[in-house]
Image 1 (tube, each protein chain N blue to C red):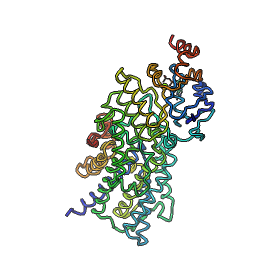
Image 2 (tube, each protein chain N blue to C red; image 1 turned 90 degrees about the vertical axis):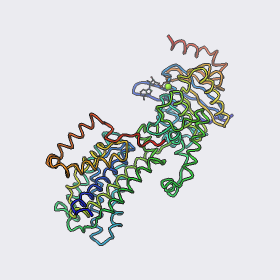
Image 3 (cartoon, each protein chain N blue to C red; image 1 turned 135 degrees about the horizontal axis):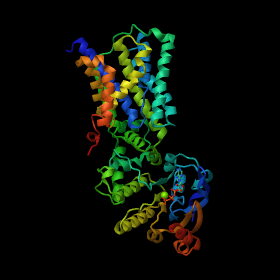
Image 4 (cartoon, each protein chain N blue to C red; image 1 turned 180 degrees about the vertical axis):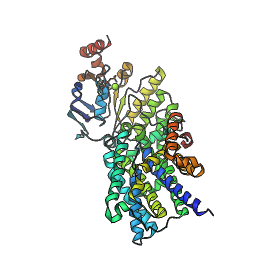
Length: 254
Length: 272
Ligand SMILES: Nc1ncnc2c1ncn2[C@@H]1O[C@H](COP(=O)(O)OP(=O)(O)OP(=O)(O)O)[C@@H](O)[C@H]1O
Ligand SMILES: [Mg+2]
């Protein structure tokens, strides 16, 4: 098994606070890899580093063997890493399908002629992008909601929309930050099926999730983060019995 | 036919609409400029100098627009690193730099201004320019560039994470706006027939800002409505002429309190 993503000794400091402390991990290609840990452990910070929104204070990240530390977020996306946001970030003023189409921006480079054609309404590519965005909405279970405004959606649908948007960029690695938050049992089942379908399409998924039943049922591999440090890594069976993990969770619960 | 007086009012209205559109474009991407007067000045001077050397008016207009567009790229570059109020301060400074430059640049008349410009601006040309500018704004909203601009305006961090190139999109929108302002400047010079630096001072930029805020920032028709009100009101109401700035200042306050989105609101913009 080859690793798609390498996180290599990454630390990230906010003022005097060390949110990530020398974290290293590998994400195997084709895996559903879960990243778990108590609140404030640094999971979202790690996502921000991997997606280029934050520069690590120390350490490096590489994708398919290539060091891309410091690359801008839009270039990281084009390289093949897409994400959602724990705090949903949709564009108000654009319809649902237009929000999804944003994900295709980096993928379409039409040059001056193509842009002019698009501008004058002759563009087939524009139509194709819209079709593709609709198909992606179907894929995440949001058929028929294309023309709504994002704030007309339930929070659960907003999360699905973010997944559709990320998928539209045709990533190889998908980062999902707490996609199950606020979902009821049926929706959880749908999400778990969706993540499996995404993997079946050949994508690698890095999943941050507090919902343990979901994590244990779909993850191939689990990395545990606590107070900025990686305290355990292994298969679900191993992690469930790891004393350090159990104490980190019990300690955090109080 | 319109009388020559109303003909001239209509031309200035068209020029003001172009100015409103020039500000509206970067505003869609969240960049608020208080220096549109500077781009207008560049367009006016470049265009006037060229027609004085017998370059055809149309070509001179295009050149003036391009010169302003290039200035937009230059002025926009530092604006990429800053946000909100700082962009306003920076563009305000840019407008002043341009004004002081033309005030002291002897080759274009310096402080005594540039006269003897031929009366080449015609109403139909201005109308055509307005229609094209408006169609452009309307169309941009429905293509990739416009979606990117709206996304940046909403949340530039998320936009960048979704693959939008902030540098390119912001510069492009800034520069497109500057081109339109430069075009307005070219028309202005060949209507006013005399230009000097102080015609393009801060109050020009501020009043352009008023068009857009008054009409509505979330609807491209807003800039047109705003420009029309501000330009035509003094023509119909004598009081407004004498108390120009006071009336407009009051309007701005009232709008800020009662209709922060401007007179026209967004929904008409959303297509089904
Ligand atoms: N931009 C920032 N500036 C300052 N501190 C930050 C910043 N981002 C995160 N932190 C801090 O870093 C720590 C880790 O935050 P992070 O969001 O990565 O945690 P998390 O593991 O995602 O937690 P949760 O499960 O609650 O989402 C927290 O204490 C947080 O307050
Ligand atoms: Mg988090």
